[in-house]
Length: 223
Image (cartoon, rainbow, N blue to C red; front, side, top):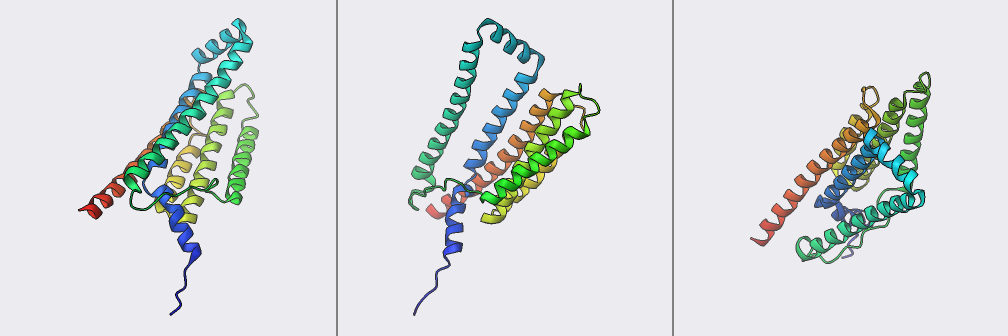
């Protein structure tokens, strides 16, 4: 008897394994925390003074240090990714083989839509606050909020595409909370801190709950 194989469903289930254990969520939570802290520092009075003094002392060395900081950030992210894959092979996927994640998990159309949302929200907000061009904090709040809304859209689409319900909630909750930054009387530095707190908290909760379920299932299967 011939049996039909739903390749689309099989591919989706295989891709979903990349996100089921919650480790990606925790890695991204750390990334959001670092980005938020760096953004807050460089927009704070102390950070601006530090940056200006460094530029006046040695502009070339300061630029090299900034590039090196970005390279270190990429290296740490890559190292965390390698550590996650090693843990999965040894513990979580030891009986399932190895899965090679796709280079791009989100549909390109969703990425373009998220970029368009970020651009529209940013431009609209900047035009709205154009009446007071000296209020740089308002403009920064809009830029930060727009990034959060666009990221929330990507998570929502990812959750819908792969049928990962918690990602739909991550996208809605963190996206809406990010949009709520716009009317708040926050400085640019504070906006980055609140943005980081929102995304770090939501992703940590999502990741820890998913990892707990995964480890529980693994223990039951080995019992």
